Image (cartoon, rainbow, N blue to C red; front, side):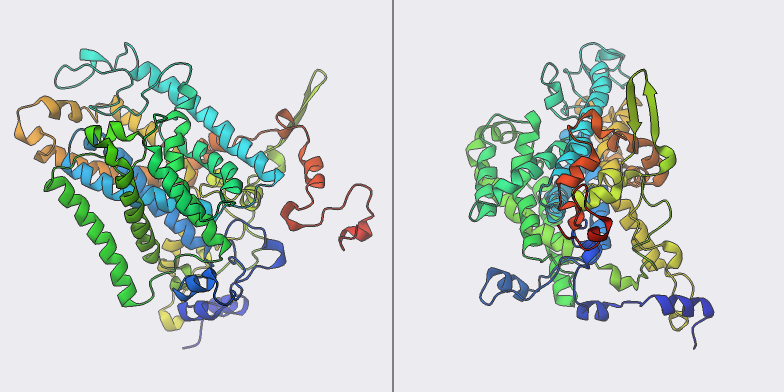
Length: 565
């Protein structure tokens, strides 16, 4: 059957790439995108490794450069959804619910390690523009969000409040300790001069990402740097740093970040399991880990939900057995690495859906970035001039490269494929390619993953104020079997809460939500308020800006195109 005129027009301008074609296509950058955001849009330039090198050994295992940005975005979406679902059931896990402990431990094994590895894979050299983005879109949003959370948490859960003591709407009378969110769960244990240095909710990720980026240039100078940082991570639990500046969690996660960065350096990534034996092995690893969590919880009564969270010192987590904390952490590294690899092996590339790329990626979508002329404000107050200029997500993608794209919370990348273009050939039945549309939609939600990551705890606070988590208090004191931590009603609530957390993560990824909340994550800052040089002066001094030769002032326009100095 001949394609319809609409399909013919699409085929005339776009080549549909199938899975077999994708394996044969070389992975390379063009000149304009060689410094782009991580693997976007073509992937790291792939060259033949030196004979006998470690890179050649890794290539021999089937690893190659990641050439599919949508696959990374899909991974971020799935990981954040599972992580937030685990967050929602953690109060029940802390209250000794076996189902909550098993589910929370399972998702904690690989969600943060895999997400951190993507962060490392997309990290780039720390140039002056990236240093500015680190301050403007990590440090400042952290201070804003931390102030917001503290202004909510302190009145609600510290000292005397309407959520404290017998006034709290529960079926029995109970008394909270300061900062206690639910029974046996205190996400913000410190209040005082150091409150801003104890991240509330998941704002720790912003601090960790800033620390990752600042330490990486020094970390890569070590020989066998991943092994060195694994040892440091195992020893970190013997210190008393705890949640201060989220240093404990940052140091423990650092090997995953460096592993992702080294994968980028070697121009490789975990490939999709193309054969049934490979796919079966990946599924076996995931199922075996889930079975291990269930067995440890139900058969051996292991109720700790802190095994894979890496938040507190060993003496708090393991009590009298804290001496074995380093060995247990080494075991956690091994298990997490295996599950992270299995997770990525189960993620199919976009080419499996026959996704059709945008017709003109360089031109992109209309209004694809947040930088719009009408959004800028230029005014004067007395003798002081105010230039209010919004940010550009393309700048952040090119010059920073974080797994949670700070500026993509209210926008989309200009080159990404459009859902309206995803159609099938008449030989394939015609109509919309729903497989590609669903893949592209989930990837788009994944590109906005920073918004649900930062605001899911705010939704949990709202639920707690409506007595959603009061079951955790009642279950600890009741004599009714169905309301105990492993009773029927609590088990049903845990399952419902896990699904609710996934739905909340999805809702927080929708464009209307990110358009509202995104202003806290991507504040339209005027750089002259914070930095010595304005953007134009800085770009002229930083000649490597997007790898374009920026001519010095006074250079003739004729020479600017050739890059002559």
